Length: 45
Image 1 (tube, rainbow, N blue to C red):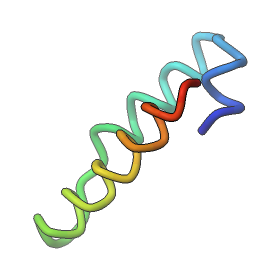
Image 2 (image 1 turned 90 degrees about the vertical axis):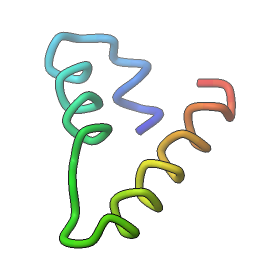
Image 3 (image 1 turned 90 degrees about the horizontal axis):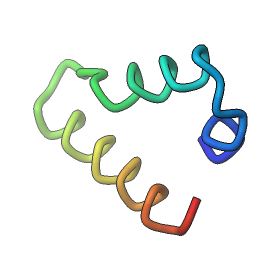
C-alpha cells in the first residue's frame, strides 16, 4: 500500500481506489478490511 501511494501514478491511484472499494462476502469482513486500510493511511504515508 505504501509503495503504491509513493508511486503516485495513474495505475497506482486506480489500484488504491479498487482496494478501498473492494467488498468481501460478508459486511464484517469488508468493514475490517477498510478499517485496516484506513489505519495504514493514518500512519503517515
